[in-house]
Image (cartoon, rainbow, N blue to C red):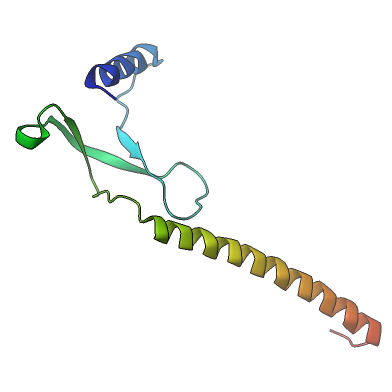
Length: 109
């Protein structure tokens, strides 16, 4: 994205906001596990034009350091979540079967 595109989008967001309020600027992040509720976000701490090696860049700094995703870690977390889901399903199935067998042989719970 170019700075001019960002400016146009910000200008449009301000123009179309009803009862304009000073919105907090955040960056959406993807966590390596499933979350419930709002999108995970990190607040923006500062912005500046780059210089020297970063010349020609518009740099956004967040309150927390961002690190490129460790794809292996993300895959492991996703696999662990799937395994946990299957384990919970298996436990429910076994509990149901256990109750059925106890009832069949006349054992009280």
